[in-house]
Image (spheres, helix red, strand yellow):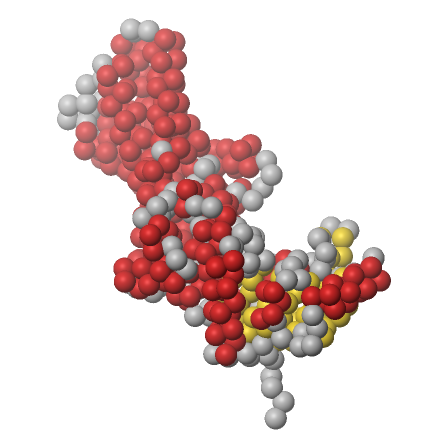
Length: 225
Length: 239
């Protein structure tokens, strides 16, 4: 119980800090709007072409927003040496990872919901009958991205070239998640039954489990540096 | 019966790249004792405090707190430590009360509002309990950091320039708190550049120079000028 409470405490703190500063959220929203504008300009009104590339574009938007947002997950801990205080706090450090992950997930959920809404408006996408499937795919994909993103944000937080290092480390590891989410999203948007893409969903679940467990097991060593 | 030191540092060496910041430091601090660490910029005061605090690993040598090794038993050692560092460990966007609540809850303790308010009142921040820390002055941040320590009740206090940024009233309060802490059997190591009245709480002075403890002497009987003379003699000798 204490473990869960400690994780919730970290998530509460991160969300409160973000709600008040709005640093990451504002940056992500402006970035997403700019991205959508470029996509709209490049693709034009051709519906068939749009349908073929939409899943890829959607996840490209999500992943770029995640690279920007998750990369900042530990910035707040460097302010006033709070990283040291986290290290000095007695108790299982993986609870801190879990809390950070929960905070990142909540932030990404807000951004992805807004980006999806803008996609629907910008590209006139009809989501009737696809919402439940899309939410499932988004949840699985987002968990994988946030799990490994939070871990790599912690690894690169102390590095001098962290802005460069973070995407270089993150993107190759996210290939299975990107493949699974794009293929599953494509099927969902074509109204195919989820059973047709069960193998992609299983890949997403496996990646999520591996990334979360890896984060929980290694975070203590990462925090210790 | 010989008192066993609560903090024991033996043959401590710490190398950063080609620089040997600590080169065989030996230091014992007993329960109920306060040691003031003096030394010039880059003498290794903060490095020594960080190694005792388990935040840095030594290159060689051992550090123990209550007989527990600061490297191999770091988790157990941390439960006994209270640290005040340069950064104060505060989140700018949280209020004073939220900052205290966060650190208490993260350590697995309940954060009852009256307990938090009492700690804030003790450092005279009760009127600012709901103000965000980013509006605080350096002295207020330091007082908030000290309020966190009053809630934790550690056995060993490691203080890096604890009086920095404090006004006269807060200094007096802190001196009183540290004296009471010593009387309760706590051990205290304080890094400072000051030779002023805050040295009054120290039972011993340890001057770091040339990577070693160049002087370890009782403070009793030494006035400010004596301390300054001893400090200069030993730091100049080392350089």
